[in-house]
Length: 283
Length: 283
Image 1 (tube, rainbow over the protein chains, first blue to last red):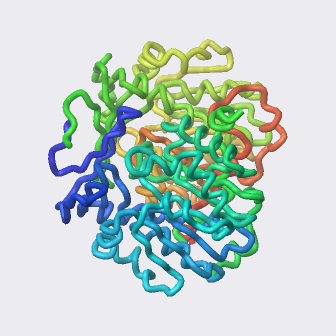
Image 2: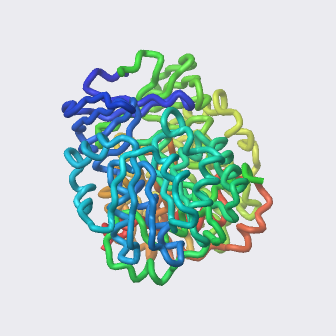
């Protein structure tokens, strides 16, 4: 049964599939110098942000993505003081990072300032820590930022970008990973959203290889559900510079004083399990 | 952008969302005495079976569901000899169960024989073990079958049904679980598909309570991705009769000689991790 125009639909060319949400109204529509941003009020998912036709986040399910893009890397790093977020303009990842009291400074480098301004307006709960003195906002190109960075200047780099087409394509490349490796202190970690294990196994494999070829000793892919992204099953891939990514600061996770809605110790450990088809694809 | 009639779309009323697959052609359309069955050839997911408008299975992703409905329960039971499948007419769960050499007999009790006949025709790879001498097929009502069963006659009961509306509604009820409990030997396990943790948390909670109130000592919900079901995130809930469901026959999983594509020991353990919102909903 075809859906009428009361629905927002994202088509996935790779899987010839589509995910749709019923909308109440379009709240905003804007062409920025970088991309086309739309904001909708949906029936079930709350507010929805769409960039260039792709779902970025909804009120209902963004917690899973933002928690998995932040806490696993931070609770793996032994001494996470300086965190860099590339992209992440909606500030959801930033908010999670700032929950860690041992993090001393966070730089959010988003190319399109309008994403952050619209997040402040339409997703205020994600931005309510933006006045934290540890948070620094820069609206410039993330690749240039990392290339210009001093060597060994960050502990964690979180690459919270759109899909590897268009502006974000360069963020999924060996030259960028080499710059990240250079900009990380020893024991440093990068983590990057890495699409669907079911639809994009080839991309994940390429990313993992490029990370290893860029000097990272250890690579680990985390799995988690994300119902508004294609296939509803998503991943993030971590790479460690002189770091073993299987080792979690277990006691610190158990003792954490802040609230999460998806992440906990069992979930962190579970996210590291590779399905049989995934494991075989790596060998 | 509305999708044209080249797409099959399943709407989820609960979440006011929809999932669509592009189709090449409709292969079959039939109204049985119980339900409306459609078979499509899709662009990416291979063959698709739809019952009463709901996706039942596709070639591409059914392995996850069928493996998670079978191997965790069997590798938890200490001595799984007699297995009953309620529903499961597509024979995908049956095929996985038959991979276990220690299983001596399997009864598949599906109310609608046409599901199995169409699976033989359109999903032959799921049915290629149907001639196994250990497999017994009965096309009758599953609730009546369990109610009429001798006490302590099964080790595992797998409830592989449609959603809890229409014909399958009675399978999600305390009277049915009480009959399952009666029909299980000590150490027995039931496992039932239990919808989406994100969309149907209330249903999962009700099922778990009803299972406990029916005499089961232990209840455990397993999480797994299932991209063609609503939200792309699905669950199965197990209940144990004098059995501890966290204890897996670890060495037997490691030593298994048959091939799986999703399931392995790490995945089994990972599936038992409860997200924070899920854990809190249980207390």
